[in-house]
Image 1 (tube, rainbow, N blue to C red):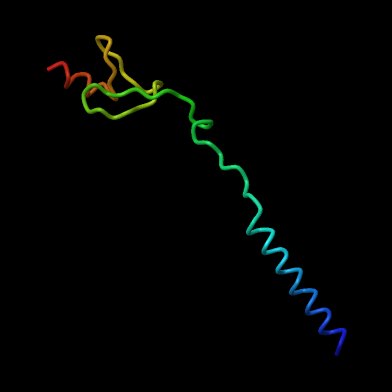
Image 2: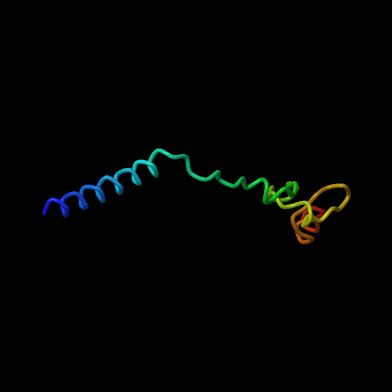
Length: 75
């Protein structure tokens, strides 16, 4: 009977220590979104939406999100 109580007490202490360690230890560093997507963004002159530089359409030294907006801004 004494041995059973001792084992249960040791299990409870181990679980409490594990919970306290998880509660007070710092978590993993959150990954920065900027590190994954380091491409610059440009604003469409027609609609104002920001798009990656690799997707922009340049017409008359102005940037657009699509060829359609470049044409619409021309008229």
